[in-house]
Image (cartoon, rainbow, N blue to C red; front, side, top):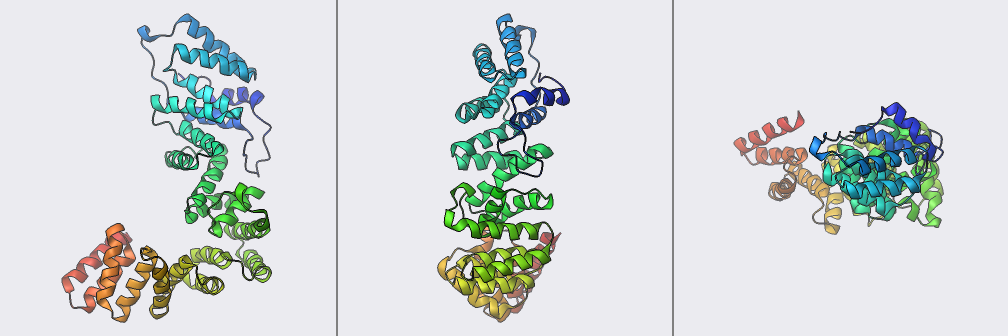
Length: 393
């Protein structure tokens, strides 16, 4: 069974944790011991062993000495004793978890990953071990593995404890941006803005995600850092709720960096939270600054479509599809635009193509309902309208 009430566990953790940074900053390496013990409280309980499975006295002695060394802050001795104990009892989940957390605390990330692998082999549904393994994988450069682990851990509740949430979401946001999942990254960064948690690396990461640059903050080129930090700061202010100041900051950036690719797109993406009409001018300026930005063309087309400006949406969608024929956003925008302007055959082809990969795409179903209504296919139009009603619930 896992030991100690959480209050006692946190107290015991202090000797080997590094000095925490202020609450208003991302913890990074700080407070590792506290993080681990909070995780430990969430780890599923080990089943009781039967009498025949009880560990030998030598194991009991090693386990007790390991715990004492851990409590006293003697990490090398604790690691050695836990390792010896696991050799005698390799199914001891608690020991593997403590061994992993001690190695994580001493920056021994490959060894910590091995220990958490054992935990997850014995207890596959253990989000705390999954999250900690993900943080270790991040430090070793195994970014794809780290993203998989942190995403699953977050889905299973590992970030629900407030003290764990910051370090998990910060790394998760970086990994999402690196995987070009920029909107997901912005949602993670929004957590920090709404709670007034500030940090230079966070602003840099937010700037990268907003300007759609799929690299980690540590890899940002020195010559781009001023722009990225300023963009991140403006985005942070917007996400924190001060849209008026954010507008001033973004306009200052546009004046200072008139050719900065991605700046108008970033602001437009934020404004689209409040409606496409607000975002459209920014997307239009983005494609004027960088006509080769097919993503901006696609998003502009979709925003124009959503605002009912179908004739304007069509050329933007065509430009996006010329660069990327499988761009689903542009396919929907063009399909809807064609449906509304009477080119029903091509509209149906595009919208049905979207539904092959996105069967629940509401806009595609709306477009097909228009196509079928225009071509006199009443039953098909009725069916599509019923699908739309179901998707809107």
